[in-house]
Amino acid sequence: MNPNIHGRALACTLIALSVIHLPAHDAFAGGFAVRENSGSMLGNAFAGVPTNTEDISSISNNPGLLGAFDGINAAAGISFIVPNAEFKNGQASSAPAVGPVPINNDASIFKGNDDIGRNAFIPATYVSLSVTDELKFGLSITAPFGLLTDNPDGWVGRYHGLKSQLETIDLNPIVAHRVTDYLSIGGGFRAVYADAELSQAVDVGSLAAVLGSGTATPTQNDGRAKLQGDDWGFGGNAGIMFEPGKLYAPLEGLRLGVGYRSRVEIKVDGKVKFDMSGTSGEGAIVQGAGFLVNTDATAEVDLPESVTFGAQYDLNDQWAFMGQVEWTNWSEFDELVVEIDQGAQGDNITEEDWNDGWFFAVGSTYRPDWGVEGLALRLGLAYELSPVPDSTRTPRIPDNDRFWVATGINYQPFPWASVDFGYTHIFVKDADIDLEAESATDFRGSLSGEYQAHIDIFALQANLTF
Image (tube, rainbow, N blue to C red; front, side, top):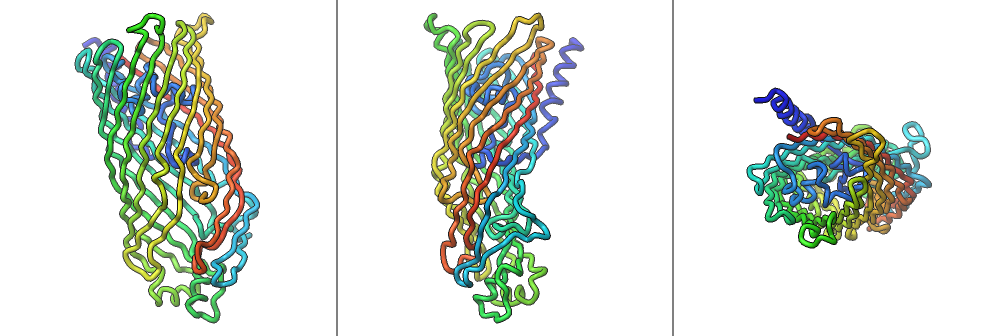
């Protein structure tokens, strides 16, 4: 074997394996979706995802694109998410059954407002192989959903949420068929692993007061509840790539793409553990009455289906323009229910009542004639409608509409290798929190305030082909 080909084959294998083992989580995606699965398309604000044939980093979004690639290809990238979200003007009170009593920040832990965003790395890797000119196989490994918000223990909204973390890995084998020179179709099987952790403070003082303790102090003796669990879910994806210009000459350079991802049902089985240290005798009173005991628990979360439509027009060898519209069926997310196996407290139910999510993006790629071969510059703009309604927004996912501004660069030093760098800044609309206690004995109490947020994303991707 030619040593150069052997070396490139080994490089393809290593680049594909380099990020498989890394977990991923995001902060403040649309809902809790993670869009950052292509370092090259980040520079176009993901406008070219359904039609991208420059590299294989879009095959999980549109499996039909796989039909455009010959030989062996690999791509691996990592995105670095730097979110900033500060909670302003926070006010809260305990359950109506005990007053209600105003809740204040614990000054010894948390002074004023703070950034709850946590930086995160999002890996993605792809490989493909042509069996024949028409039949192609591929594999994508991505993190399509994730979440990480983390509040300090003593913050004013501690009974509504402390840490919220969701990590996913999506293993997606794909097969595509090049039906004709102008049409490719593809589909795949998705195996999604999800690992979740949710925690919040528990107002043991208020609960003990309701149970009849004459010495109980509401909001002053907090316990801590934590749910941890994991599960596998299964689904599929499918897509079409259509090039009408190969049928009708005036449309030369136009490419259309449609991608579909199915819903994936996740049933997180785990345990709820309660930490009563520091609650004096009130914790013993509460647990003696059968409340807040460690138990098995289950939380069902359906990862939603989505449909993406895109178009790209290659004006000439230098300029390409692209756009896309994506719909995500978040409206099925009505409530988050944590089913408790044991304990007098019953199930934990959080009303969500989300709307459908929409994402609109436009972008362009320019290949300048500056005497440097293999250079491409990317630009992109996007607007995303959050599925989270104002009425049920919680500190776990303080999401709102956002505007993307993106840029990127691709450099191809060799015919078989290229590298991409992308950067995006996201302006997030201020997100109001206005949660009222749902009953007299809702021990989360009320919470109001406002999140002010923005996000920076940096991405690096390497691409190999031979």
